Length: 295
Image 1: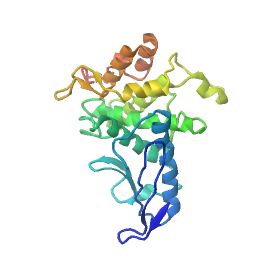
Image 2 (image 1 turned 45 degrees about the vertical axis):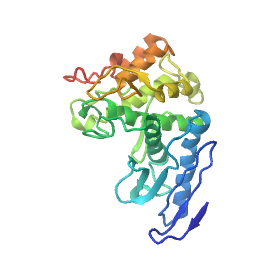
Image 3 (image 1 turned 135 degrees about the vertical axis):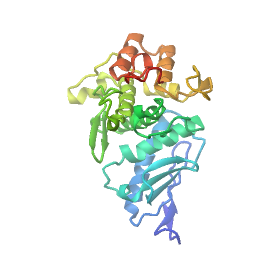
Image 4 (image 1 turned 120 degrees about the vertical axis):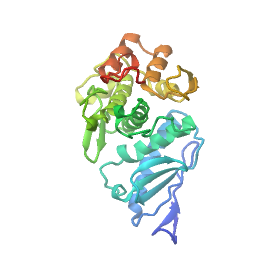
C-alpha cells in the first residue's frame, strides 16, 4: 500500500487490490490507516468471490470506496462508488464486513452486471421497505446484497455463515421469514428483502452447510453458487411486468427469479415452489394482502 499526504484529507492514497482480473482503488480519508486496512481486507474477500470463484470480469473498475463520509453508507451508481459514513468507518464497526463492505460491494457488482440500476430498485419510493414499494425490485436488490455476504462468509470459513450480522445483532436466514411478515405495519416492510435473501440462501444451502452445528437443510433443494450466479448474471427473455421493462433483461423482480429458475430445470419444481411459498412468494407472486398483481 502506498500512501501520501493530501491537502483534502488527513490521508489520501490508493490501495491496489490485485485479484485475478481486477484492481480496486480505495480512496482514503481515514485518520487511522488501520481502519482503511480492514476495509481493504474485507473488500478483497468479496471481490475474490466474484472474480476467482465465479469468474466474473468487472466492467467498471477501479471501484472507489470513500471512508469517513457525512452522508451515510451506501453504493452510488453515478458516479460508481461506495461511501462509508464516519459513524461506520471504524475497523471495529459492528456492520463489518457483512452489512458494510460485502453488502455494498454486492450492490456494486449488480450494477456492474446490469449496466444500470434496475428501474424500480434502490427505493423508487422507499429503499429497504419492501412491500411499501410498487414492486419487489427493491427487495430483490437488497436481498441479493444480503445473500452474497452469506456465501462470502461460508467461503472464508466463518462459522454459522447463514447468520447475517449487523451492529444490531443478526438475522438467521435459515428461518423462513415471509415477505408479508408484520403486515400491515409500515415498519415491517423490510422483511420482504430478508425473505428474498432467505429464499436465495435456501436455494443454495445443503446439509453440509450445517454439519459442524448438528443442523440440517430444511428444504430439498441445493443449487451450486456458480449455477445461481449464471442465472443472476445473464439476460433472459422475460414477461414485461411494468411499462418500460425490456423483454430481454436481467432479473428485476421476484417473479422473474421464479420464472428463470423454473425454466432452468436446476432443481425439482416442487422444491422450488415450496421454497418460494415458505418465504411468502407462492409461484413467485408476493402474498401481501390487497396487492395482487404486484411483481
